[in-house]
Image 1 (cartoon, rainbow, N blue to C red):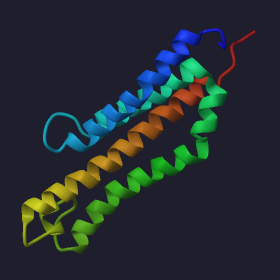
Image 2: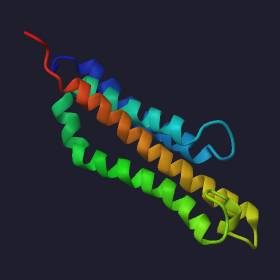
Image 3: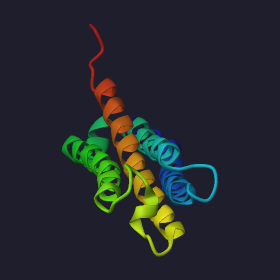
Image 4: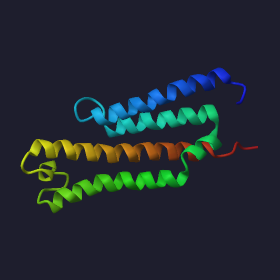
Length: 141
């Protein structure tokens, strides 16, 4: 693994752009194609590429399993919390108009941004966790 210098250099150049594209898809999702699920998968693919090139131990030092579990819970909490907040403000579950009754379009924008953020966090963390679980299994002797 340490002899693959070209692969490592290319990965170091490519991974930041993959993660940046995931952020673009995440925050552009309410205006066009994309959103939380797609961004989460792209973000996870960047970490999976890092793991394939630099090894599982290096990747686990960058993203610890405890952090992944926390991000999974945070993503679900953001999604569900947005729905509960809309109910507490007098609307239905995930009725974004309740988030800003003066300007419902602003409420719609805020609501979809929060929901997509929760979905993106959850999807990325789950995908990385699943990959780490499978990658951590030893080969049968």
